[in-house]
Image 1 (tube, rainbow, N blue to C red):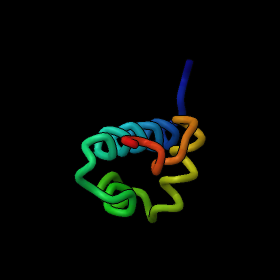
Image 2: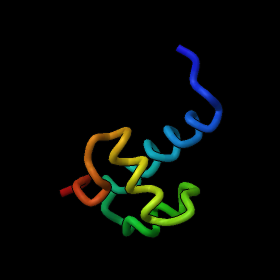
Image 3: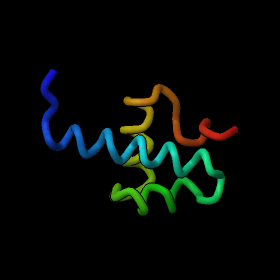
Length: 60
């Protein structure tokens, strides 16, 4: 299955964000910035779509 370049970038960022959130060392806003999202809301939207839960539910 082919994936568009932008979709690949979003998917990669979300999975990097998930790994960072699981460490418990960074806030959601910090992680959003670290992986290249414009803001926490942008991360939340894509995270929920790809992972099925919001970033706040990860690591709890």
